[in-house]
Image (cartoon, rainbow, N blue to C red; front, side, top):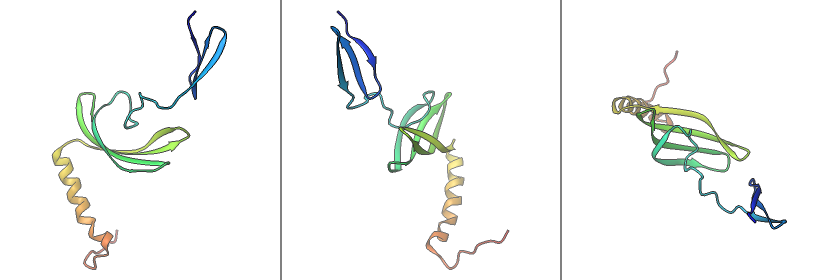
Length: 120
């Protein structure tokens, strides 16, 4: 007689020879490293920050044939990570402009007296 799977949420519960047997789930081997869409092909990534509620990472991926480097921010709701923000870098020139803009504003973080806040 074959075993029949009844439930697979917290534990796999099977019925075999009219006996119910519970096999607890210890590890999910199919869990993805980064919680991105199934349609995206992840090449690599680096976690920047992660705690029990927030996760940010830089992920190199392919989306519809185009290579991208993305900065993600996810928030955990229940047992699932939900994407809150995604910033895409599409090329070297795009990255150089972004890097230059950020570096020009970094003196603000250190309180550099020569950094002047511009009025709108």
